[in-house]
Image 1: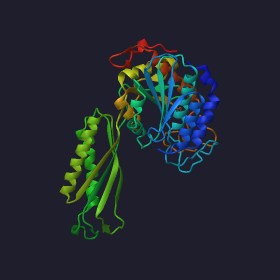
Image 2: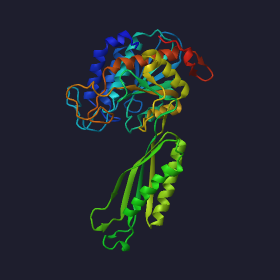
Image 3: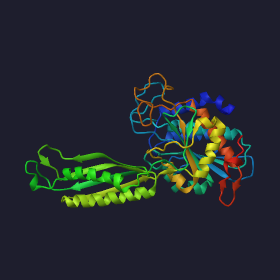
Image 4: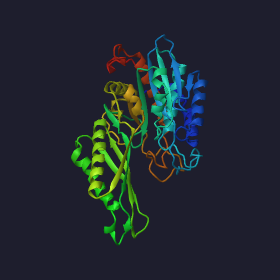
Length: 415
């Protein structure tokens, strides 16, 4: 493992920053204190900043000593989750009902470590944009920053992201050449029948039995309409109806989520869900309102940029520590919006199995979105070094001027 010595020396400083952010979590678009911490650190290190993109977003602009204008973007997310922390160690959340249960505190800190190093070692040609994004958790902060002109104001050839991954061994990385995270979509199906006495159901039209039949029918879309080689999930997670044992209610509401790795499969599922809902309810005498909301598209790595990241990782930790065909996740990530507009790659960095946690951690597993989770501070120098090597490697690599992309991995010249 080839960590940068100055970053290793900052382990204690980085840990303090990470734990401070963890102890003071803020929800999407409310990351005011976190954004202040980020902005103040960047300015302390002599980095020009721009604030306000996406509401609370912060962009640091690190210019090398050369005259080149080529740019590369490195992105970290800052927001926490609306959940109660089960841990009781010293840096546990001080804000009730809010917790850094996904590791965004660690993501922010790793990128800060890289920014500090790049600011102190500007012997590169080009510009590194460090992007601290709000509202990854359900808020679509990436898209909000883009709508506010992220890629117009800060022209970059490519953009890169990273997420910690519990269960993967510390010191390892994972990536894929293509989809690595799924799209995220919700649906709400409201079925309206005719209420009646439960002892005289023939006088009404039962939306509950209609919902039961519809729930079964919707699964045929996955088993009979979708190409079995194209992964997808249709999960009904809620059915609400009725308020008394002896009453056939007027309405039943069914909610859930759909996850896919391609937009084409998502189009198919949404279309078939609409048709199946309409005709099933009509056949049983009910009316239906079908609402389908698309939130995050699939997170799809660009093959050339994924190969570039793989080369950087192999040079950093060795080939055995990289799984470059890692199994994708049906979780979602709003970095997907950035990859729709810019070439780039999203990688996972192993967070270990949880034995890094301080005394006082909760009884649950150290998994994402779990009250017992905590980011592994041993990753901070590794993640920061990865960001530095990636940025310097990208800016020093030969590229195809017509395409505006970095050259092949064999052309890289890593520090």
